Image (cartoon, rainbow, N blue to C red):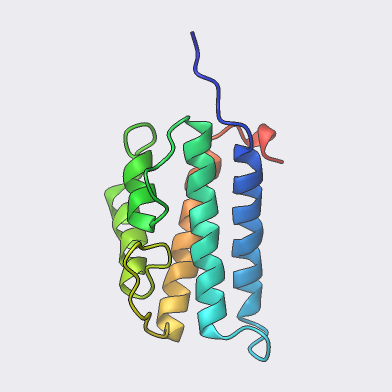
Length: 136
């Protein structure tokens, strides 16, 4: 018997791609998008993409921290250690879903560049690990 994917995984992946596109395009509109907003949009994109992957693989994480999402996905769809570490490193700047939040530090332009790069890598990973035709 094949385990069915959790309904709605496509929506999360599409939304993640849209958040990432908005964050990337935001760099050219500094009057509207500051580093903090771009960083948060990119972090939400990464979260949505990993949740969609988790739903597809019928493996929901125990929490929605970026570390928790990566660890929750690992048993069914592990990613390269380097990518997993880069995702977890985002929490050093802002751990947006932590149960014990601390004041975030303002992301630098370098931080924004890094998170957008990680976001693109996660989008590629997500689209490589789900049936693409079911997403678009």
